Length: 236
Image: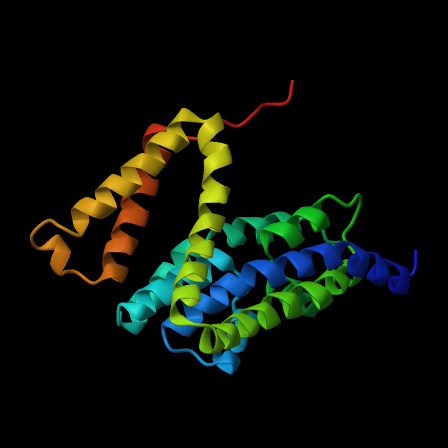
């Protein structure tokens, strides 16, 4: 199969992802507008960091006037799962795949692009991922910019209402696995409770919101990994 055909297959599979990104990133743009970013700045952030949770975490600590090191650290923690996805993809490339292709594909490893790419049989052809990225990246970046512009035009009440949409997206992400797994549902509840307590307790409440988020993320995830490790299925 030639590279042009594989590239077109990537575009075909990337089209619905790009349209989905356009809709989701609109809400992210509203959040970006609320912290004072321009449409171009919102576009640029999404172009360089194509990750909803990572960007929202970054915007949250930026809104709290966090230090640069806090922004870097919380973004790293939020996006660390992409390192595992990248490792999985690297094992599926032909050994003679040039480093430059691995570099560019690593730039945009998202949950959705990883899913459609890793599902293909045999060695991965970079042209397929490039085709999907061609539509996914603009969808995410343009959607964010449109969200910022809409936030500048729409009345404050509507902007406030739309700001809640991103929280709805995150709730939609955590509820299904929480319903299936009691450990996850317990951790979600613990996260809410401890986050509230951290904002009220002496000394801890004096920390910036970004620092509190980092502490809770690292501590709760570490405790969960120690006491509730994910069991690997062994081949029989």
